[in-house]
Image 1 (cartoon, rainbow, N blue to C red):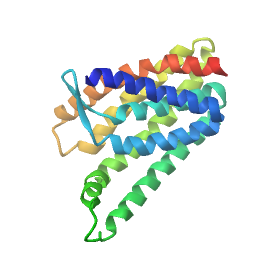
Image 2: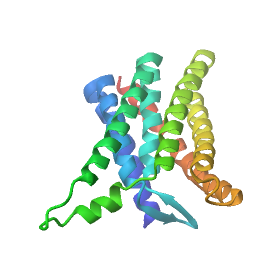
Image 3: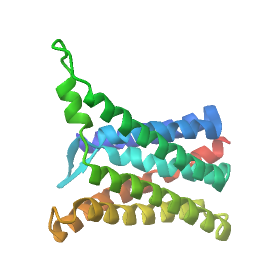
Image 4: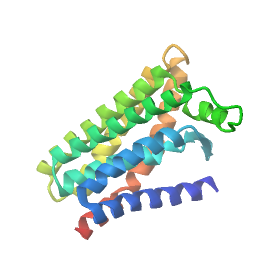
Length: 219
């Protein structure tokens, strides 16, 4: 069932990216990047099994940020795509600051959600720092590579979309897992986790290409 729900999740998420751009243009994509960054930081906490792999639910939402910046690079400009990344980083940092401040308040004796919030919002400074850093670097690199390929191969949108997204996703996964877990897990385990996540994200990245074409057609 997880595989079926996974494909439904991909279709729904990527369709929402296309829809919000259709309705609100590049401003809608800025909103989506903020939404995706915040929701990804929440859903990433839930782990699921797909075939023999264990992965988190945040992968599709993180992947949708690449689709959003690719649409902006394709239909608007490289500058707009970069601004979208800055917006998403600001949203992510704001989410972290507010949730951590929320946890500092002493709950009422009648409160029933504080423990659940502590479980959901408690973070590792090292992990979140590595996540935000690699999120920023990978998305900026994706924008740069996408636009370089767009200049060189203007008629091959599928090539620039897949090559930039897959390359940046792969690099991001290995660097993030190394920065976040080196000294905690053996290097062999870190490589195994990164490889598993990369395989899943390659599949997700390939799935976003039809939605990029759909967005371009709707323009």
